[in-house]
Length: 466
Image (cartoon, rainbow, N blue to C red):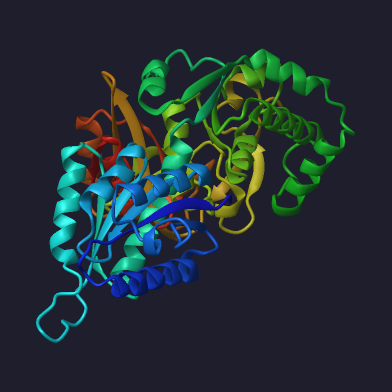
């Protein structure tokens, strides 16, 4: 993953203790570099840029703005190392309005002889926050901290994940391959609103183009052979034909080429039934492999579904591929457990044990077994999961978030599946129903509720956490 560039605004105000401010600044830098150096490139003014390497007035603010623009920061945080100059802080924040912004206050050092308060950050942060609020600049508050505090590390970790989502979500380009299924109004979307609010683009690609390009590839194309060999190492391929495996590989080659050419963040794919009828495979495992490699790929041309996946992949710092699920059935005996399922699209990394390539358990009824091969089937691994869904009505977006646990419980299901326990399934389901959320969602391993909710807060997306 490309490092996330975060700007640090070290605020100070005369006549408070500048030596304390400089000492504290260095400690914050050291903590961030030691804890997050593999993920974050920290950008901050040095003594060559501003007075004392701090931000104390408009001149310092302008130099810091230039530095941040030159380095192309993805987000910024402001820390009042002493009282802090709120106008200098606000000036920097104004230039980056719309970026993720977080502010921290700092704890008071020991009072010097004579009763001189060295910092007063507790007081000054109120001035900074009111200046941002007055200017309608969205921001998060990370608390009153020292750099060594667990609270600072925890909230900085959360903020880094917020920035990660933001840099992938804003300006995302989602490929639309084929029209949505006629009877699936549930996956409608509004690309004009996406462009207006988040600078996103839906890139329309015909399914015919994809199929014909795949047909033209020879069986011995090195890219095709490489994919076949890779799949053979982790999946049971004994139940599908060599021809189907080659077709899957060719489809993947074509889709990766399109993703690179059109600079796509993800795609929504028309996965039934034309691809089965006219090309002769189910594309489920191709979508799974694309997702695992960082190209978020949703079923049934679900564009908002792909964006939901993008949010989850980014919040994991691009370490964990999400699973695009249906909310399907309730457990027969456990009231808070439901089946997270889809036809065969789980990323290989989340398979429990060795999963199999099979024929589509639904599509074969219409197109036959031979034309429906390509699903990746089995149970997903156990663990804590976060489930998310983005929807839009009347130009307004909202985001559903809940946490659960994928269970190590067997079942006799076809497709990709796992039983998931949530705290209150009745409340989850009622919320989905009453708030207009659809039957698709994205599920990722890990607890990312707070980071996703804070990302949505900064963008003004209504967030519903159950």
